[in-house]
Amino acid sequence: MGDFLTISGMKRTDLVRLLQATRRNLPVAEGTEPHRTSLHGRVIANLFFEDSTRTRCSFETAVHRLGGQVFNLTPSGSSMSKGESLVDTARNIECMGVTAIVMRCGVSGGAQMVADGVKCPVINAGDGRHEHPTQALLDVSTLLEEFGSVEGRTVSIVGDISNSRVARSVTHALSLLGASVRLVGPPTLVSKAFEHIAEGPGIVRVMTNLDEALDGSDAVMMLRVQFERAAGGAIASDYRNMFGLTPERMARLAPHAVVLHPGPMNRGIEIDDRVADDPMRSRILRQVTHGVAARMAVLEEVVASLEPVCR
Ligand code: CP
Image (tube, rainbow, N blue to C red; front, side):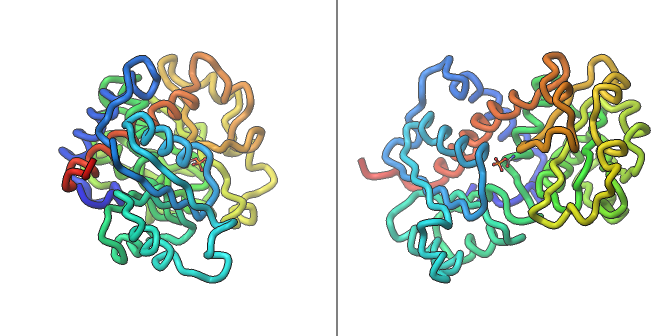
């Protein structure tokens, strides 16, 4: 496989194979089947230059479930505080004999920059506003568990689209698999240009009315307003009324429709407590379990293309 940096540009067959592997990994991720040994003797470096709970911990868990070892580097306590660059940091870590680098950073395109600077495979764990490809795998895998197929389904992705690497990656994946995607938000957070990011047969439509979008949606993915990327200045004081998923809005959804959120959630802004915690509709915690399975799938593919390790 080499690097795993984007969903954009992926072949449908490659995406389907990773999703099938994710599905097979679920019992191991859940702890109901024994660990594997495919990463035995391998060391994976988790370089997280932006904060993370789900992605970092699920990559760590995935490595453990595959019998490998993993270490974390975060900016506090690293020499990046002395001005060392992303690429220099990654090059030094590579020379410690790691098998692969998992990297999150705030720079859009940062994962590609690092991949160009090192020889070992790089897995993008989210780079700025660009892509978050393993998140797309886990989101689609969660929907596949629900619906069997996403072809012909309609998924609304709601909120801070312009700052969202999740929205980009999952839209690429869903459109490649033939789902229709509605990107919903205020014009300050989603422009018509997003209609051109479809990667396959699925139609991508930009909408500014959430209630219209919910009609006919099979799934709704709420996005966090990314205050750290200045989205706060782009939302009005009535944001929750316009774009928040409230219990009243949730009641408008078709009976089979489900609610997703990549996390972390701003409860009371884009999603209300009673929606996030709804036992019938919410698949938000289920997404997290799929995250471990998806990251196992990517790690196993990356390692399968490498020379065997000395034991
Ligand atoms: N969904 C996601 O990327 O969450 P974290 O920022 O906690 O990793």
